[in-house]
Length: 183
Length: 251
Image 1 (cartoon, rainbow over the protein chains, first blue to last red):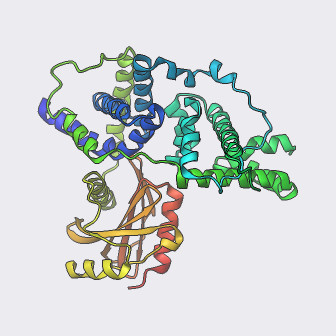
Image 2: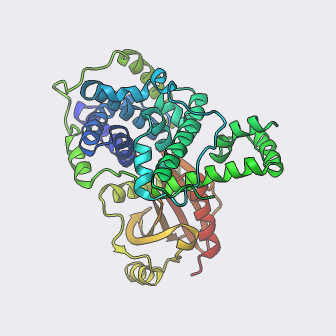
Image 3: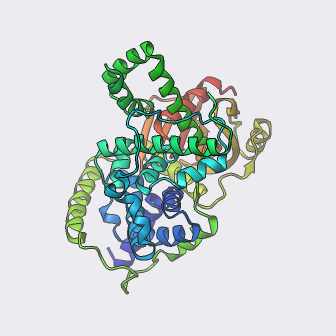
C-alpha cells in the first residue's frame, strides 16, 4: 500500500471513529477548562494527537478519545493555569469537609438553571469531570474509569462525593438567596 | 443490609451499576426504610435536574469545520506542536498486537449483508451529524414529514411522533442505503440524535442489536418494512425507541 493510500485510510478511519465524538470531547474540555477559547485549543490538540495515535485505539472510541482530551486538558492547565490543577489533586481535595452520611442532595426541582451550572463549575475538577461524564455523556463507571485513569471504586466514590458537594453548594446558595430549602 | 451499607450502594443503584443480587437486596431495604427511599428519590431528582438543565457544550460548528481542515490530509512530514510521549514505543507495540488480532478476526468473519448495511446506515448517520445538516425537512409534525418523504420515495414510510415518550421527532431526509432510496427519520432525545432508517423489505429474522465505534444500532422488521436505528444514545433507551416504533408504526 502506498503511503498516500495508507494516510487516506487513516483519515477515513479518523473521520469515522473520532469526529462523531467531537461534541463529547468539546463538552468535557469546556467543563474542565471552563472557557470556550481554551476548550477549542485543547480539543484541537487532542484531535491531532488522536489522529497520530489512531493505532492505539482498541475497544470503544469514545472513552479512548475522552482520555486523550482529558490528558490534553491537564497538560494545558499545567502550562497555562497551574493553580487549576489543584482540583485534580486528592490531597488538596481531601481537606474539603463533607460529612460522610449527610443528605446526598437537596431538593433540586426549585433550582434554577444558572445556579445549577455555576454550582457544577465550582466543583473541584476531579468531581466535576466524573459528574459530566456520568450525567451528560451517560457513560458507565467502567468507561469513566478509563477516561479518568482511576479504578472503578474511585469513580464511585468521586461520583458520590460530587453529588454530595453539589447538594451542599446548592443548599448554601438557596439559603443565601433567602428561599430556604423546600421539601 | 444496614442503613450505612444501603447508603453506600445507592449511587451505583441509581446509576444502574449494581449487580442484580445486590440490587434486589437494596430494593428490599428500600421497601422498609422511608429514609433511604427519600435519599434515593433525591438522587434521582438530582440526576434528572443535571440531565435537563446542566449545560451541554456541543462543539461550535465553525470550530468543527476548522478542526476537520486542520487534520493532516497528507503525510506528516514536519513534527507538530507536541513531541511524541514517552509511552509511545510500548503503546505502538500494543497497538501492533491489537491491530494484528483485529485483522485476523475480520478475515475470519466474512462481512455479510447485515454488516454492509450497518456500515452504510452508520456512515449516513455520521455524515448527517457532521455536516450539521441532519435532515432535509425540519418538523416535529408527523403530518408534515410523512407527505414530504412519500413524495420523494417509491413507498410511504410510517412516521410516528413520540415526543410524549421523550423521543422528539426533529425531521426527515432521504438517503441511499443498500442500493435503494430510504427514508430517514431524525429523533432527538436530550442531546442525542437518533436516525431511524426505513425501507420496504421482506421481513427476515436477525439479531436486533449491534454496537459499532461507540454507536448503537437496533433493527427490526414489521409490516414489510425494515427499521434500522442508529445513535450514540445508550443501548437501553435506543431499544425503548425500537419497541415504541414497533408498537406504534401503522402504515
